[in-house]
Amino acid sequence: MQTGNYVHKDNKSANRPLWRESLWGADWLSLRFSPVYYGFGTERGDGSAVVLIPGFLGTDHYLAELYFWLRRIGYKPYMSGIGWNADCLNKLGARLRGTIDRAAQETGKTVHLIGHSLGGVLGRAAAAQQKESVASVIALGSPFRGFRTHPLVRRTSEFVRARIFNEKSNERPECFSGYCDCDAVKAWKSLFPADVSRTAIYTKTDGVVDWRVCVDADSDDNYEVDGTHVGLVVNPQVYRIVARRLSLPFN
Image 1 (cartoon, rainbow, N blue to C red):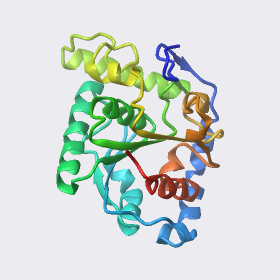
Image 2 (image 1 turned 60 degrees about the horizontal axis):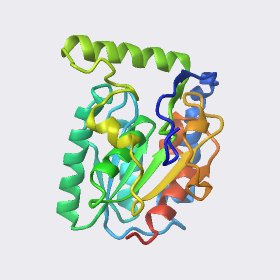
Image 3 (image 1 turned 135 degrees about the horizontal axis):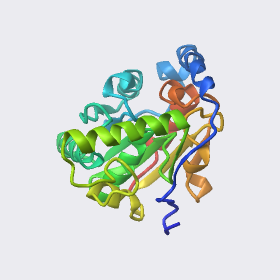
Image 4 (image 1 turned 180 degrees about the vertical axis):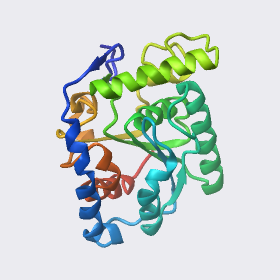
């Protein structure tokens, strides 16, 4: 274990209840029936930019519910622009940093990042690389302390890693893993910037990721919710926490 609350060389299978992820629709229905979805009783935004980052195998499209909600409560949301999250982490990180730069320039303010699953890992890496442009990072079920995931997810990630290496003649054999020596992974491994706010939201009933690798050592930054891993992006408990954390004063 390194300092900074991270475990890096931890790439294992975890016995997670993957079947529970079929219940993510209950999270979505709860959101639609919750006052928070309509902005009632939530802290209002100040027009700051919020960049949304999808998880493994995802694209920006599935974050649309969160995107439009942020706009309703007074923020200027941006999709990440990274494309399909199944590519070299260094390339994904470079695309994300371009979006962060644009958001900061257009709003004239530091930028908030919200990343789901692997998107939260990319967000934390970007914060380390662009700390002058980032106000906060909110990670939703993100395994930033080590990739302990369901065996099916791990096997899929190995397939993606092999495809990246073989099809693109990648010179880094550990590409798309926590062992890679690329700039993105080095940034993820580095100490999280002290002047950037961090939030880790997790669920102990996560059917994809071991929740223990999704929390910081500082318990004040951790928030437990009920629900599924997939449903974290449409979970009303998550939305309440996000609204509250985004409204805090930042350096």
